[in-house]
Image 1: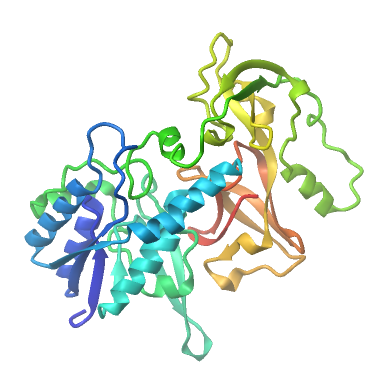
Image 2: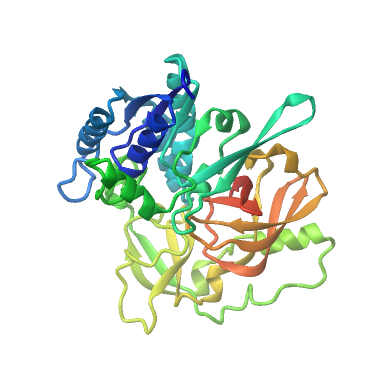
Amino acid sequence: MKGKRVIVGLSGGVDSSVAACLLKEQGYEVIGLFMKNWHDESVTLSAECPWLEDSNDAMLVAQKLGIAFQTVDLSKEYKERIVDYMFAEYERGRTPNPDVLCNREIKFDVFLKIALSLGADYVATGHYCQKASTTREKGSVRYHLQSGADANKDQSYFLCQLNQEQLGRTLFPIGHLEKSEVRRIAQSQDLITAEKKDSQGLCFIGKVSLPDFLQQQLQPKTGPIIEIPEGFSSYKAVPTNFDSEEARWAFLSKRRNYQTDNGVVVGEHKGAHYFTVGQRKGLAVGGTPDPLFVLAVDTETNTLFVGQGKDHPGLFQQALHIQNSEVHWVNPDHQLEVGASAEYEVRIRYRQPLQKATLHTTAKGMYILFEEPQSAITPGQFAAWYREGELIGSGVIA
């Protein structure tokens, strides 16, 4: 690949370090670019300085590999596109996925455009996923986003909002490797990141106290925690007299609309917008035989509805809905016309095993009907659908 320039998003971790190493070995002209996307360390847990240490490690890796290195400050774009969006979603009682958004809005948009302005032919990251391509009629190319070879590290879900143009300009040098092999390569090259732990927490921010983070704009507001008994009957039975299949899908994907008189007050919270469906920790309510889980978040009344145990029926739904404007096809060849249906394997969160489901497209959006009921389907998160290891499309859960 002599003459081809690749700009690698050097994050200061082992994965991007090895990605840069492999690309150099393959003959690319490699440039390392570190993105500084966050300045406020007041909400970071422990004494970690999440970006300074990473920046230094990225620079040392670049020096070791003998490649050019630059730092770019994208904190303004990150705040506008990620942080402000997160605040708005939590305020609505929804739970955004900053990692998916960061890839769509920052790494493969702002960062990609900067790389192209620097004369790059490609950008590369340390994601555990793979890319393939097929040549179509008239010579056009279709790119395929595929799962990483290491099933325990597959990160294709986080890239579920990428498009064909972005995929065409992107390389995933370690997607065919197991994590253990990546660390072995880093050790053999004596890279400072070889034994470095994987980053955790919010994308580019690190490990944070989410309530402290949200309180930057969302003020605490005391409200009731209401426990819904397991036998609450309003949603136990599914009617059989629907006017249409679409009406049945809509019913199955509808969020439970609990009322304050459906249960009993068991405690208080400091803001419903700090919580998410399926959450267990942080409720500070004891004395129940089984742990309490959040069943529903009502930010209009500032109420949390909870239930005992991970098998509480209020946690489970058979279907979910995605608005038309939120449906995204990574591979447009599979796009479904209104009225069409297709079977796929779907996941609604990172690391969740793929679930068999049928996608139904309607004028009102897409309905995903699962073969088995799913726990904690969370509004604001992304559903991604796969076929034979390829990520075909995704959408924001309504």
